[in-house]
Length: 298
Ligand SMILES: O=C(O)CNC(=O)[C@H](CS)NC(=O)CCC(=O)C(=O)O
Image (cartoon, rainbow, N blue to C red; front, top):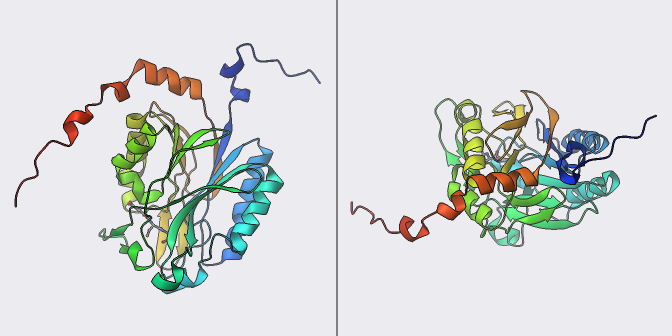
């Protein structure tokens, strides 16, 4: 076979750019089955050459009610994370585990969990954790009520962006995408990729999902990676799907459709830097003004 042509200019050639995989699944209350499904997609991502695979919020399970959610939850040092550690090692890639139902240090007192985004490196070590800070307590007509705070504690802090083989990643979870303050804080702290692993509702999905993700990408000039839950999880719950990767210009560069599967994208950081030079919004910000408006007295 002919040797593959070498790159002319080192970073511009697409096969040298880091490849990331975004996995879309339908989690159920069956943890073992969910792991099997996710592991197959991660192995496929590794075969295709990805250096980093993203799994959605609640990749571990989606339960029928808060009591079942609490019962199925585990600490970070539990069996399930152990299996993912092995998987990352075996496949030699990084894993963004988008929203793990975590029994934290305070489990005994609170009897509540954290919605914890865990980042593993290719040796399977935990390199970062972020606990979802904006909890989804909403009632949308036509979509079952969501009261995440019934089972979950809000995380205490944001996490500084983390160096990965694909770029500096800022961690968030699902409903967090509605709060541009968070994405701006992450971008100002150096993020090049924002991640919103999600289990987005089937009513808010068609109206808000793509618009929010593209807006976050355009205003922060970051790549946005959003792995999503899709389909019917049990009798009472379905998710919108449409996992995607958006580039810093706002173009959707990869997307899944309705069902389980994965999509792939190359992360081009020289493109990102060029765009930030051409359109230097971060240099044009006016932080001297934004805090100055007085609040109306009601
Ligand atoms: O419940 C679990 O096990 C995992 N967590 C979730 O699915 C969370 C909380 S209910 N879902 C969302 O944040 C959806 C947000 C959304 O749909 C919107 O912002 O429109």
